[in-house]
Image (cartoon, rainbow, N blue to C red):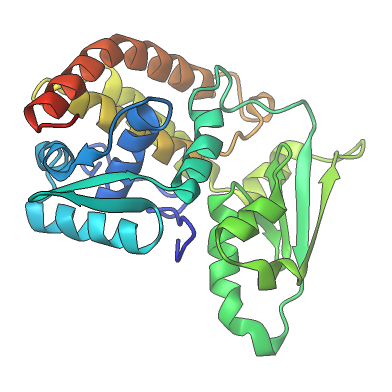
Length: 286
């Protein structure tokens, strides 16, 4: 996210259940998307963000550095009222969070129209090798898996032009072609999925999420729990772009993960909103 948002974690990866730490920016984006984007809240006093991040294990120095970086990258606008710094969303962050929110809040976040895929091919000349890693990382973040060198596929219909534009990769877009695609009869879709994605890692990510939220952490406030839930959910959505469950066995847990998120979010949200309102009042927000 140089003026574009990058994923804090590499797609297709997961971690063991005890190691669920998020980068501070992931927590801030989760909080902003969950509680600020669709609200009429005033600019947020820095103390509110620092207290929330501190509760979630982020040091004050790291939290301040994160807010500074996000401001530099065009994701936040900083203003000063007396001795108090305040932050609000920019057009860029609103766009990014709105796009993510469509899937975060979807009742079927892992579903796509049956048989729909986006196919992308590119040829990278030797003179543009500097773009190779950035392009591959961005495609993986957007839900693509690599079938073979230069040929990528993603479930559903992906707005590839928007993916490249948000990442500042317009040059890479000139080297690529993308199409809506459907498998022909005789295609082994399950085998194709297993070639393009690390299916055991995706499965493990679902189990980490379900295990973690079977009992929400009691040591956090409801706002802290709700923010961590959103961050965990975004991580899972990045890891599983919506692989077709019908080709992954009868016990594929995507639907259970979606139900777990929906129920837990609904239970936490009223208390979290109330806590945020009290925190803003205590910090002197208008």
